[in-house]
Image (cartoon, rainbow, N blue to C red; front, side):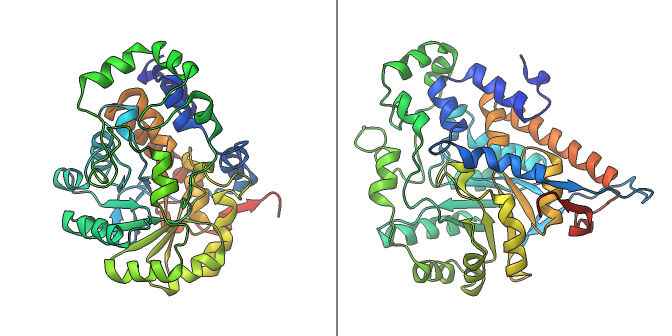
Length: 383
């Protein structure tokens, strides 16, 4: 199977599984506990049907949107995700280059493997910086100041990860950063030597956003320890309000699921919220993001931009989300598997397929602009 054989998300997933050592593939693919929320994220879209209109004159389709003050050529963006150079040596460099080619936004994580400065220097497309709230308040302020100096447009605070989720696939292989693999995990790396050769031939793995604070290279710390020891479960609304004021620009909360929390985010000055359950990787048994979208949009109105994240793998998923009031949709695994399978060409092929699906689906819906999508073109099966 080659990249040209990939025509949808599942194809990219299969190709990534073929090329990645098992522990790394399962780190991307896995979720918390019984992975029920992970499965529900995708299944939720099937409970809502599209109702197309005909004879609307749809030769030209404009896919552009504006979200948190950023103009995007596509209604999707590449969500910030951790450890990308572990999946492919190009990592965030491939992600950012692909996002720029398609005129959309990309995110860099505080657990990213390329610096926010390099990404901002090389690419003009809007950039999100995603970070976590630390017990060290000085570190939080320093990270925001660094992002401001780098020229980052949007600050995104992840609020559903004050502790790590129970990801049992990782426990079975011993996956961690730095690697502490058990015998089963080591055997799966041995079975995929091409990944190891490629990994060793390129620059050493690092976390440049945190390299002054967490020593991953010496084995004295790990990603697990980072979540359990450095992040602050005591974070509250007053803490976030202070950070919103300190940033002074578009500020977004990622991991909002309850309508009252979205309303509170608007009240303290957030420009946006990302409805997300972290791809099912945190609280298993929580609602799917799409299931919560309507409630949150109805509760917040036009007070902030609502973004959907988790489970999106098709253009029709995007149309359903925007019909319910989302301003844009974040992609995660949708581009991570293509990245792992083929680097930048993989991400670009995935975005090409998504763009083509969106244009085709909009024409069949009888719509020429994203703002023409409304609740009127949806029907709910279970309501």
